[in-house]
Length: 151
Image (spheres, rainbow, N blue to C red):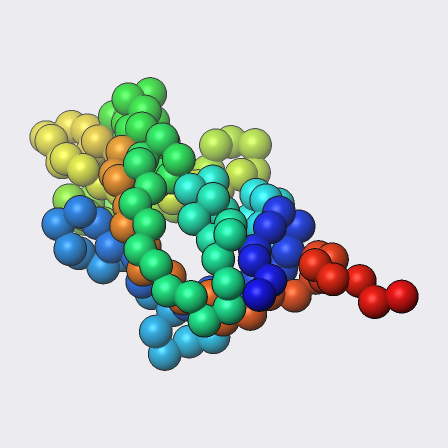
């Protein structure tokens, strides 16, 4: 049986959860995730997790934060003056917003604290600092070279 290797394009059904069992993403009810192994399209731990799998195989992988979205970076948590928010917006903890860096690039932030005069925003990826668990099922391997080459 062909095994997944770097450079293969694969289709994988997955269920992603945190260590407390909370689901953060799943392909259930959707098409499987398709990506090229080793191309940087998915987090490093996911690439490594599918490598060596065969079509139809199922397994659970544990990805430490360092191989997922990295640690929480304190410099990505910032205070923003409350009076700079639009007048019709009432900031609330958990609210997701998009900010601009002044050079035309937008990035998502989450409000983590609201004080009298400032709002504390977190621009870290929502899964930064978290270990991830994925239940995987390899659906298809395409691309790459066959193991046996016919003359």
